[in-house]
Length: 440
Picture 1 (cartoon, rainbow, N blue to C red):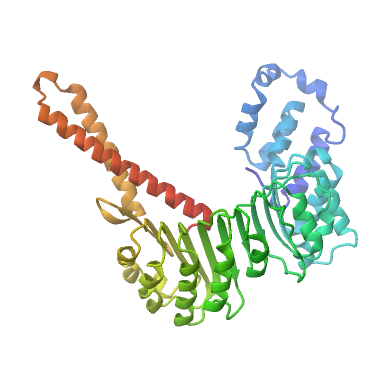
Picture 2: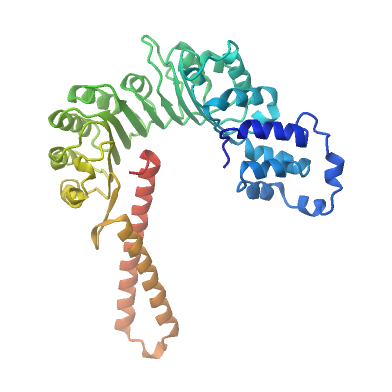
């Protein structure tokens, strides 16, 4: 996919206007259709052309757009499908969308930073933002990092988002906005929570994944089918057992049921951190995935040594991810962390995947705890063994094969199949963990 970066937005818009007649679709029509070979290329289904053009860069796509009207239309759909202007190109991008509805309607993903943070925007900025978004009727994924009470400028937009990331204030105007978004499934609500704002019970009925502060989560999670939550506790002294006890108790009222939780926080001292973790496990014992990201502070050996006490409270935890910004804490000591997965597994037998700040460990019933590299090697060896066995049985003389050999081969096949299924399942668990929480 091709997001707009740097001057690409302006370059593409101006180039298409100048070279391919965006303003006047009739430009070049007859000439392009009369070019030798045009008919043969255009006989290819447009879906195939679209798939091919997805692999081109923006400059090549602009050049492709001037070949003929068909190529122009397809190129525009590719160029404007995923749009991410840099901070200095936000206003030109919005002007483009406001002026050319047919281009804005191509957008499926739009990522907008807060232009008001970096320079004084002109007085009509918010009206321009609204005009652009009103034209972006096909948007499904919107990121709008605009701090403040500006949700009213998004009211009445015809798009139906599946994913929303925003720092708009959680106020009455914002409630009206998300009430309109009936297809929303994934959301990051990072705006300031305004007291006495009530979220109607019949909104966000399709939401399954949410990232927010405890106050917003308290309004969103109960009695909704939320399956994945990211809990943001970035202020000092918030990672305490009383706060986590209340927050995790609120999350337990999800009807999802809740299966995955990530906590982003700032660590203070080890005893407080351990008490907070135990509060989570007590209230959410049926989690399948848990991830913890320390944005500040030290993940100590003492805390990691005490993890069995925390992990033993879970009933079916499969994936554990621990990350830290502190590159010199215990989590980044590969010698110390090399045996943690096997030691933790004794307290939490359901555990299958452990990711520790750059190291990934997976549990295999035959080989025990192995690294991701080991698992890939085992899968290659298994594939080679299966091919070798297949060759043997293909070339063997049926008369020379004994019944015992056949039975032994069946048993080996069954065992290998079981092992292969387990390793493939582990890769799926790991992939899901990385999709939910990102790589270590």
